[in-house]
Length: 144
Image (cartoon, rainbow, N blue to C red; front, top):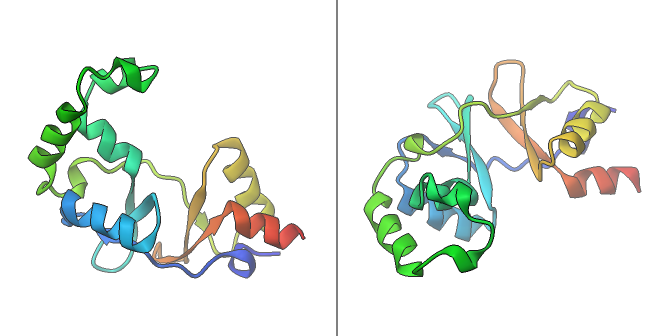
């Protein structure tokens, strides 16, 4: 079976010039925790998650944390978030994202999701445009 047969046709995405503030609103409204970044032609050019935004609030220091108890003051995150709120998501997105083509076999998507521990995998067409995503639940539904 092909990826196009099991994917969710969810085109929730944003462009690289969307602000962090707008991104948080989109995450909340769409009830997603990550999304692809697309250009004007809907070609996938990056990926961003809630975790990326949190990392941006505590650069360098975040990697040293093992638990939240090491954060001296939650106001630090709040202050930093206020400072970056109007920055474009391009500043914090990942450029080395993993995607799958809608013509790929479903087994390829499953392998990527399992091996890379990915919650959802952007699906592109032959032109690199976003056409949906494969989520873990899509795989489970397909297997059932």
